[in-house]
Amino acid sequence: QSALTQSPSASGSPGQSVTISCTGTSSDVGAYKYVSWYQHHPGKVPKLIIYEVTERPSGVPDRFSGSKSGNTASLIVSGLQPEDEAEYYCSSHAGNYVIFGGGTKLTVL
Amino acid sequence: QLHLQESGPGLLKPSETLSLTCNVSGGSISSTIHHWAWIRQPPGKGLEWIASIYYSGNRFYKPSLKSRVTISVDTSKNQFFLKLNSVTAADTAVYYCARDKESTVMDWGQGTLVTVSS
Image 1 (cartoon, helix red, strand yellow):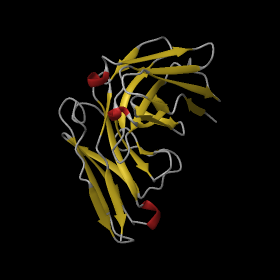
Image 2 (cartoon, chains in turn purple, brown):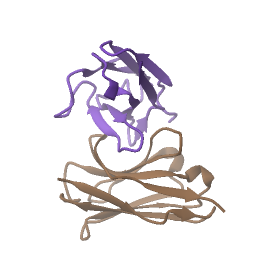
Image 3 (cartoon, rainbow over the protein chains, first blue to last red):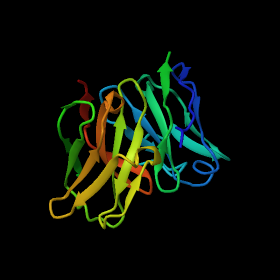
Image 4 (cartoon, each protein chain N blue to C red):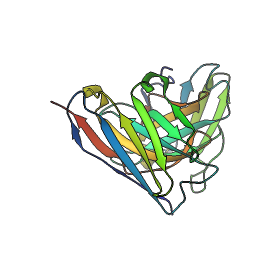
């Protein structure tokens, strides 16, 4: 039940694309479609941006997309904008509980 | 519009029991498609899911916390609760209550900071 593995940091210039990965195991990410991504700006409440691997909630720009291959899920942010600078967390269903990733700090250069 | 509001003591001493309440408004805690969860974030660290409960009382716990945690619900008051026993400094965190559907956190409370210090 260790946290899902995310790189601590990622960066890109405005307009570029960035991919953030989230690696789990065959008991969590690899086993279920219930992988989510959250955007967290300092001092604010986390915001759901992707659920069920690829689905976007209403109001989330289509610049945000998700995918999964085996035990690794990915969040792709296209056309980076300054307001995308935030911490990003993945999570996965893991049987009888939910497990989060350690978070990735995305910096827009 | 669903609103979740945490309440509880902001400061505890080591070995005490943390008790938090989440008041749910704008929606029914007796929803048949949602679970109600507690999630925390220690200062400078990532999010950690603690537990969730279904209105009927089915409970789910993070395995490493299970021995110290109890989650419960009061449908008559539209509230749910968290108890965490034998707290230490490592339990210092912002505690969020949340509504989740199929392991996806759809709605979050504003969070409440709980500090454990002697």
